[in-house]
Amino acid sequence: MARANRKVAGMSDPDALLERAREHCFLAGVGDVGEQLCAANMPYGIAKIHEAQRQLGHPADATFVGAPDATVTRNVKRWTQGFGYGGRIRWSGDFAVLDIKSNGCGMLVGTLPEVPEREELMERARTLVEDGLEVEGIPIEYDLDHGNHFLDVCETTSSEEEDAPPAYFVMHSSGHEHRDSSPFGCGIYYDADESLAARARIIETPWGTLSVLEGDDARWWYDVYMRVQRWNHARRAAIADALFDGWGEVINATHQGLTEMNAAHLGCYVFEDEELTDELVFPLTISADLPVYLVKPRANLSEDIAERAGFLERAEKHGVKDRVLGANLLPHGGGYRYPHFAEVEGVVEGGPDERRFRIRRTDGEVDELEHPRGQPYVYRGDEVLERMRALELGEPVVETSVRYVLRDKPMPGDRK
Image (cartoon, rainbow, N blue to C red; front, side, top):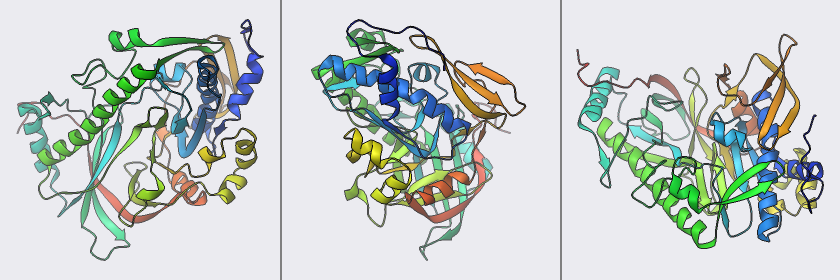
């Protein structure tokens, strides 16, 4: 693994610190190139947080615990700053990390009395786009056609409950309404709102910079962010009201957000032990041609599973056992898979925030990529479900088949 000269006066060996950060990353997913890329990049983000903790006078204890769908993030800025996708990031200290770029993205699951006709639903979506919709006086941007957002309309095929509804919908949505500005106080993306960036302290590390907010500024931003996250929940419900009659909420859950100022989850669901009721389920959407599952979570990870995964000794060594045991996470989807890549061979470091990932292709050739955006990908399949079961994270209690997916944006005036 090639490395640039990153020595900083008064600092321990950066390579040793990076290796220590790597030991604070706990991944036990499906093991494909998507997860290998996550495992190769995450130590840089964790090492940066460790260095911020040292400079701010806190123990260097930041951790990443991966979910079965751990993979890459296609957000170039987040990736370049050293963060992957599909797990929980936690640290101690009175400061917030802006580079993680939490945005309140999530999924709303609702029951339906029957499967609506697709054209009927499209007609309602057209009306929504034409008439517009506001939540708390803020106009909603229709985003079910954006990126990997969607609306699945599903028919129940099996359930542990005898009186299960005949149909469900799953809406994956977050919007862009608050990223560069917000009436709640600031935009939530530091690279989109200059006023937020101006408040940040830039931490210099051997691996690049990290933007943080301290003390009162961190608490202020966390309050703004949580207002946005709650607004996103209301936003999804308002869209559902516009599209469906007689729907009932099953869960409206964030999978890219914060639970505390220093606790982020990217591309996974998280919960607390006290939330584990008979009614609590989370959606697992793998791909449009596979079932959508509602999963009943279990308290996880158990000590036995952590030991079998090879986590326990490292967690005890670094004093972060409580972050691994009881991580309480679930996969939110399949995650990205790269079938033309065979293996991640290493990282070539060109300087701070300049990394290239050496990847051997299935034809034996080797590519060097700065980030995975633009690479052909597919979504994983049932291997995520099976890995979830093997790690005893949760168990499906409802299985549905996807009748159709609403992803096209209806344009005003396109009625037949």
